Length: 197
Image (cartoon, rainbow, N blue to C red):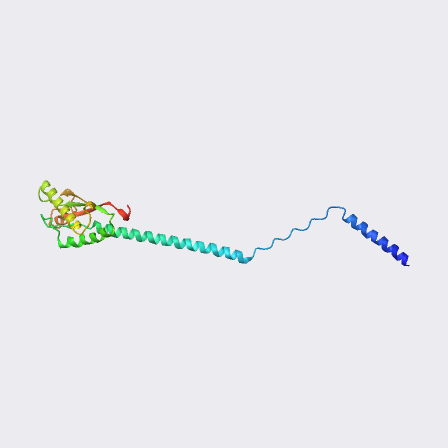
């Protein structure tokens, strides 16, 4: 019986070996590819948070730029409004009146702050008197304004003067109200400096 068992075991071993050889005779099947590991959710969340932070920072930067632009425009408009204020004169006079001094004082403050701003002072008259006389009177008015500004330490080279006499009335009428408006000095910016053009 032992010999039969040995024979059977031998035969069984041979059979197992033969089956194994036949089964392994071809190329072994490829190993399955490992499944990709899902990216950790924490990394995705960090990327999303960084993108959101960058977006918010960009929005804040744009808001600051827009606000600064609005502030600069408002300041520019304020300064130009002060510069554009007219001063008026009494009939046949070129003296600076008290109400004109108030206007000119506002200009002095602005001109000290914005040293790059220059302008032309234009002298005007009402229609009474000859053209020649009114041109000379308009020039005296423009020069009086210039002297006033320079007396406060402003550089004279920032101001030019011209007279238009009666040629450019602010109001076209022949009455006291119109004449009072026409006896004036106007201011025309020639260099904007820090205000930009």
